[in-house]
Image (cartoon, rainbow, N blue to C red):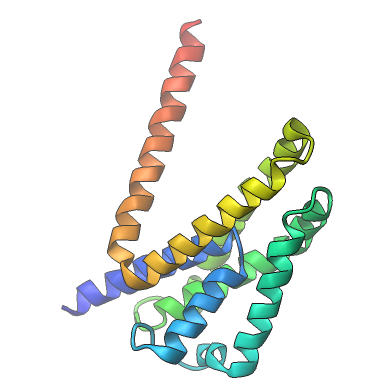
Length: 191
């Protein structure tokens, strides 16, 4: 049973840190609220600081700012530059906080995993956003940003409530994208 719990925690860590690449504050707030008000998550020191009322309040304010700023063309690009630091750090914190019950994972390795996951998702988002702005004249920014926020929220909630289901969904997404890229490359080489 301990192995199942360890894998569940690891799946949650992957989901939460991946979600942070889209919006740093949503998964941090989900974890903070779940740890403070439920038994779903128990954070050890120093991660239990997330459950402080002050930290939760600051996260709510930062989330509101992020949601508003990310909907405005050009300002969202400036926000993405700022978030290039924030999102990977949030991913690192979330991975380490979520996986800290697994004794076999060194804290530094956990931080690096979260940093890479959130940083990778953020890099894709930050690269795609200027193209979306250019293609839609900025009109698509609010829609895309809202979709990103919803995806971050759903991923965060699944990571906390159903981490194994989230892991399966993430693997399926990677396989589908890989298959699509393979078919696309095959079609190109056939021409």
